[in-house]
Image 1 (tube, one colour):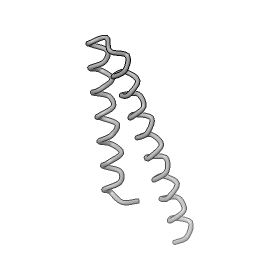
Image 2: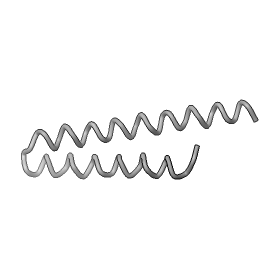
Image 3: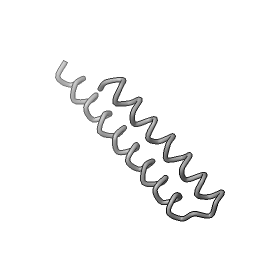
Image 4: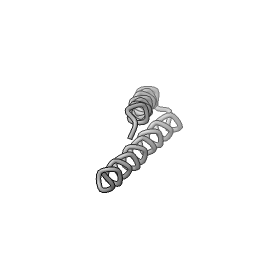
Length: 60
């Protein structure tokens, strides 16, 4: 997996956490949900990259 893809997934996770926190502070459920969705997307991206890494290890 490329370091760039992991960095993008991590950035998406941080973005989601910030947005969720802002939603919590302002009481905006839309921001809360969008933040959680971004965190879930980041988790999926990381999982996909983990799978790519494992496949690459088994081929090498």
